[in-house]
Amino acid sequence: MIFQVDLIIDFLVNVLLVGFVIQFVLATFAPAYLVSLFVVNWDDRTQLWKNTNYICLVSGILSAVIGNLLASFQFGPSLILALILSLVISLVLKTIFNKRIPLGEIRELTKLEQGKVLLEINNLKVYYPLVGGMLKRQIGAVKAVDGVDLFIKTGETLGLVGESGCGKSTLAKAVLGLVDIEAGDIRFKEIKISKEEYSNYIRQKIQIVFQDPDASLNPRLKVVDIISEPLKNLLGITKKTKLRKHVLRLLEEVSLKREHLDRYPHEFSGGQKQRIIIARALACNPELIILDEPTSALDVSVQAQILNLLKYLQRTYGYGFLFITHNLAVVNHIADKIAVMYLGRIVEIGNKKQIFAKPTHPYTQALLKSRIKVDPDSQDIKYVIDGEVPSPINPPAGCHFNPRCVSDARTKECEFEAPHKMEIEENHFIWCVNPPKELSSNGLTIIEE
Image (cartoon, rainbow, N blue to C red; front, side, top):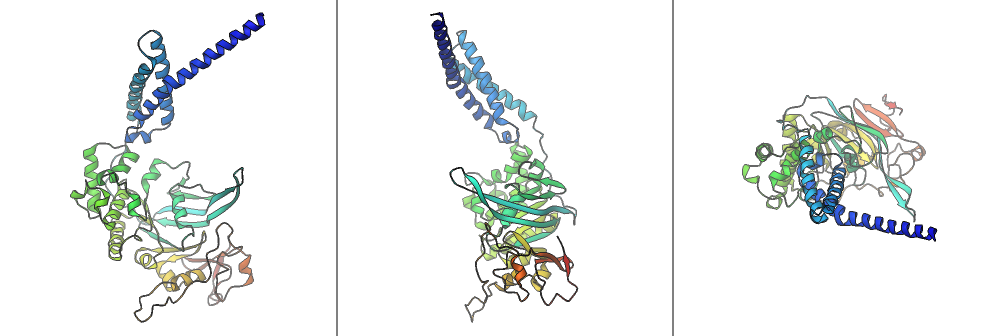
């Protein structure tokens, strides 16, 4: 009988305890936590904090405990007390943590020292995993970038060209820390870049101009808020007069005027929208700007204006540009160096004159022959590269281009042997298995990797 009484007492205690916990969690803690979450995140500077959720959790627990304690002394309903305490505690914590944020200073745009290496990419590999089956195990990978080496200096534009799906935009995302890196490394001024450790300083110094201006601008924000967003998010600056003055200076840099400050994106043309995006990229005084097809959505006349603006900004401030495009005429106009990419690999790199006057890799030659020329007497397309781009899930063995290659130097070795790095002339390299026949006897340097 005593044993049964003990069981009954234990059962009642457990029931009461579970009931108390449920009441505590659902009736006081959960509402208090939601109030804390709302109050804490109602500020642009909150994203500069670390562990925001922990702060809301602490505020919710303290509010719920103190609220229940006061309610037991008949000070009022526990829910109302918890909500009031949550509001007060959240505001106090918010004030404390906002004061601890290291505020940056708005710096005037200054010219960078020319010829210094900004970005170094060494043997970069970016694979997207493929999962399948009931257990969602990895069954393969999309080899979007498969062993790329590049570098960009201040005052230099590197044009990255290639067919759709060859990995150009994935390379840009890796530089921006948006995707995981399988192997290799990326360094910005000797600072290693990774998705896990993408510092506030790197975010200020590397900016991007996207392809579609409509998708890049928030339709609910005015231009002054769009351009000042990096200043709020990265530097913690919230004074409106200070922000407006700096935004006006940036608008003037891209040939826009004061009356554009308080307009919405839908009130601008495509070229003006792209100018706004460029102004936003300049807000934190960057050093490297990634331009992912910045002119493809614009009319030809507007394209010329944007390209001339970019060249002016580079001459004035010495920015380094990574210019991604399909348009060979555009890259010929703006680039200093050109890297040709095919199925995740660089196949040829050199300065603009070397690539256009002396293309050496079979793919580069085919790409340049594929350019459409204006000919009123003929509407035929003169040259089309044979075959389809192979799947990056299962790329061909050896040289990736070998199934489509029509070079007279193509041999059976191309189907299983990895391409070698070959120096055609100073600063002009190709990655190929067999050197072109016209160059094989002229002292061609093969660099083993």
